[in-house]
Image 1 (cartoon, rainbow, N blue to C red):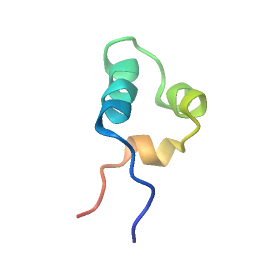
Image 2: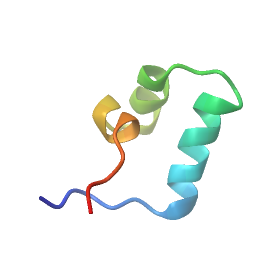
Image 3: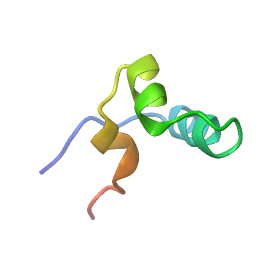
Image 4: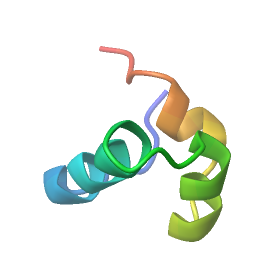
Length: 45
């Protein structure tokens, strides 16, 4: 199953918002217009 691919810098910034700035995954997902699952689950290879 292939989903939408995001640029590396987009993914890094999303992670930083959670890990460095302390936002909830759900807040970041909502703000960026992606699902919580897409932020919370690593991609399958």
